[in-house]
Length: 256
Image 1 (cartoon, one colour):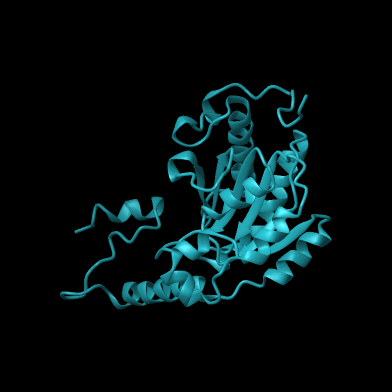
Image 2 (cartoon, helix red, strand yellow):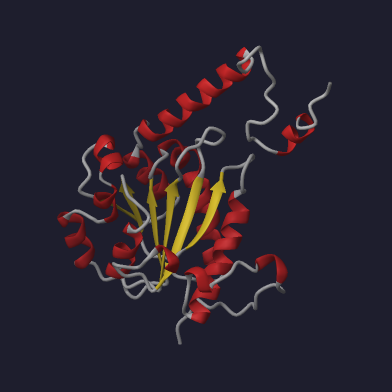
């Protein structure tokens, strides 16, 4: 008898309709699960070549800063999420000494829980995002690269740079169907102490299986412009990009 769930497998990467061998799953399904589990572990512990990433950005003509949290190992990062939400004293001093110039967007990249995601997708996603922002004349400050960071770190960096919006690209927690997914989180008026309710998220960026770079950049541009226009973000700001007319050609990033 044909399993009615089997036809649904082509619509999802979830583990459904695996079959049965006695009281267990078939060997092929078991080996596939073990491989996915190993890939998820590798994504977490794989070292991020942050210096190489920074050099690639400079070759693209982008200014960048390498900043640090107090975290000194991946084991500590996993045990102490609180220490991944703040900069160390040296990095904080560097930002305090900078003139952010009231930039529109503070753009941050961290490996988060998947260094592999940042290595595979970080640069092309940044290229798409920066291209969208430039097309609307939205000012982006130096890109901050931070190893072992958490999402809330963007509040401290955005606040220090005097940015209207803080955007952080982060390696998402790997699952057993996706170990290389990137997420984008952003908040209007970043400042330490912001809650998750004040942030918006664009997740599952990992073409070709997930969201494409251009689609993610388009969503981020829309949400950024809406956040600056309405002076809010988070639960009060909804993604209505697919249900509204194209945005006005007037760039909202310019200050009068």
